[in-house]
Amino acid sequence: ATLALTAIPVGVYSYRAVFTPTTAALFSSSTSGNLAFTVTAPAPVQVTTTTALAMSPTVVTAVAPAAKTLTATVSGAGAAGTVQFFNGAASLGSSPVASGSATLALTAIPVGVYSYRAVFTPTTAALFTSSTSGNLAFTVTVPVPTASFTASAISGIAPLAVTLTDTSTGAPTSWLWTFGNGSSSNVQNPPVVSYTTAGTYTVTLVASNAGGAGAAVSKTITVTAPPVVVPVSSFTSSVAGGVAPLTVAMTDTSTGAPTSWAWTFGNGTTSTLKSPSVTYAAAGTYTVTLVASNAGGAGNTATKVITVTAPPVTVPTASFNASAISGIAPLAVTLTDTSTGAPTGWLWTFGNGSTSNAQNPPVVSYTTAGTYTVTLITSNASGASAPVSRTITVTAPGSTIARIWRLSPHEGYVGTKVTISGTGFGTPGVVRFGTVQAKVLYWSSTRIVVKVPSGIRGEHADVTVAPLGGITSRGVEFSVKGDHDDDEDDD
Image 1 (cartoon, one colour):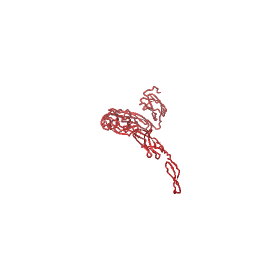
Image 2: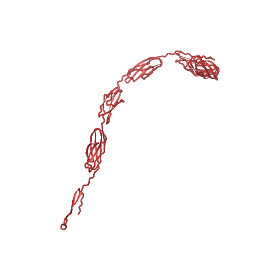
Image 3: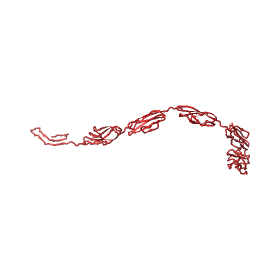
Image 4: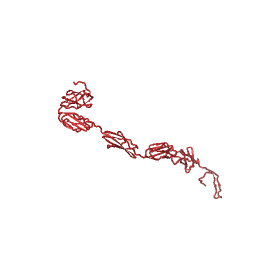
């Protein structure tokens, strides 16, 4: 007979078998000996755990006082035990593991730098290993300040002095002020700020400490301009009168801070300059006025009288230029007045029987060979000038033309001998220094020797050669040093 036994628990057993016959008459009962059997518990299997640490909230920096929840997650199914939380080597407390995790809430964490870790210790060391998490860093900083300040005035008339006082909280250690007028300061309570110009100014303060800079706070300062008083107009003039043309400088001496000026000078001209000048071209009595103005309005009218007299009139000095003083007939000559002394009348005689009263007469045409004297007399209110003349030499067609190459010397005193070199001098005629005829010492077709005559007007004279029956040369300039007679012989 057999019997199968299963799920035998731990224990010590003594088995025996007893036979009982179905028919006692036929068979006897019997009992076996005992068999011993021991069932022992299996050896335990130790589970390896790991512990991971997390922070909530997850930020790694915060402002004091801070709060943080530490959560340790322990791996290993069914792990039971306790988690100890540490900051560095200092224990922060412990919490039992439930459903694989343990938590520890931290509050009012002061300023500092922290390094958190979690250590798991199993209830049964044979079943689970202990484990330690990595470190989590957390920094708690000083809270930033809250900026605030007071102002002794927020509005007023320029110049406005304002005292600013810091009232910030949160233990600031530095201050940045901007005053809205281009200036700034880093002191807690800055010096008095002066606003000299009307306008709206924004004062801003930023307070800071080790935790950083707080939010900026601002106030508006409104500055108005002082009431404007109209100017009192006044001025001086460089002269009160004089001879025309008269230039007078005007100098503004108005008070009351004028910003614009309106001048009239009595001659039809005006100006808006502060201190202008005016020129009076004609004689007369002129009233100068000035009105100075500013934002407050126009001031009074200041006046001065300038008396201008006519300049004394003198007799003019007649002079003129001729486009040619010699040439072949017909010869056209243009005459140009160069008189000085403000002439108002002109009397020309052309030596050919014609005259003119124009300042610059029409072209004069000499159609016949001959020597013509052109004379000009100028006049004005003071009288007539002395006459001035020039000789025009007109030769018949085919006449020789005199040409001067050089003068030796080309400068000297009255009486100095001068050698004229050239061509076409032909038959001896006349040599002139300007309009003055010179004494001829020698004459050939290529060389003439003369003495510098007296009576030459000015320091320079054009030397011309007019051969008899020939065409006068162009002038060559000679410089006259003065009246000094040369003692050389005339040979």
